[in-house]
Length: 162
View 1 (cartoon, rainbow, N blue to C red):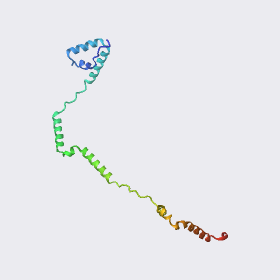
View 2: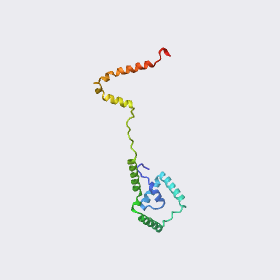
View 3: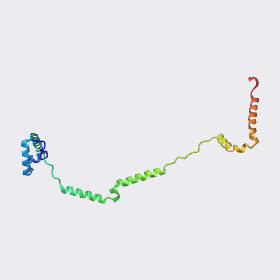
View 4: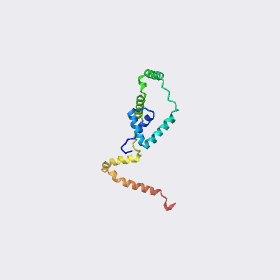
């Protein structure tokens, strides 16, 4: 058999069941006479079809019952409210609205001013007005007041380590 000859693989089942047109059946028969591989495939097809022969055919569908069931479902669907026919968009919209509402109503963090002590506040105020205080004689005498405080503290220290 040459490489260009097509093997009638898809025609083997109709060939065994005698469902091919006479011209096609003759072509397959001619091919089978010269091709060992296709004869083996034909034997396999006959074995499979022989094994399936005792299997009963499926029952014919009861079209009347099918039609009645289909009509009942369509009638049931028509009785539902229009908004219930497609509950997914409604549920999605409600979920989105709830998420948006929660986002809008969430408490916002309030930024508190940094905690400052009274001494920091006094230093800040004093530093802001330092240029005014430079013109007063009191500022120049503050060093003397500090020295006076130190001298008073010396009076409290016991003499001779007692």
